[in-house]
Image (cartoon, rainbow, N blue to C red; front, side, top):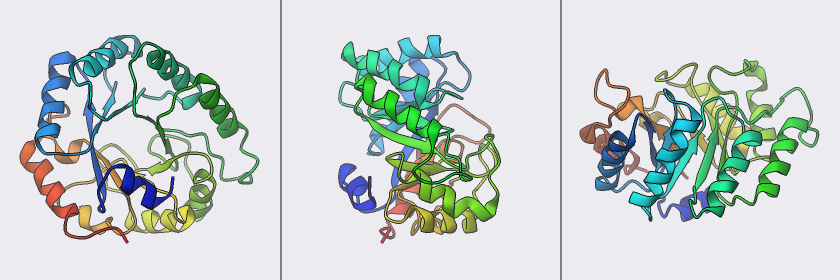
Length: 249
């Protein structure tokens, strides 16, 4: 997906803000989704940071029931698309449509060629076969995964742009801002492919990334201080205000 297509899809010229909710239970998720909806963000991501996938699935079903028109994506922690896409396909058959999947690791190997990416190719094959139609946000040079030599950030992003809808990267850890030079280099590698950042974005530093990035997946930067699970509406609004100050390109 190119940058123009992403911004058209979300109907915004600026960086798309997608709050990430670390899921605990139905009440906590619904409460935070309502906060996000009240601030008019285009959607949210849900992640099972502290619960099993088996516990997560009924919550996903409940979210779609309670919020039938909500745009939302999911992240099954440490699960690649190879195993996630069939689950999403089965949910879709039950009428539970998930709009996006975010994998921390898209299994891109920057030491191979763009065309020869056997693990990414396997994931693509599974995605096609399962029938799920959502957007794929693929983790590339991502936190807590196999370390990528900074000299290969550009190549890693270039390869990734051929295997997913939105190339998604991060800082070194949850809540840690990404080095601006990393983002700039990866932007160069992505060319016109949409690119997202999934750690360390705050209302205070977001302006540094606006030119290079099309999407912020953000949790700790908009949560209450010291609270891993609940969105602070005031912080979210300040981040929204920051992204309105300029368009991406």
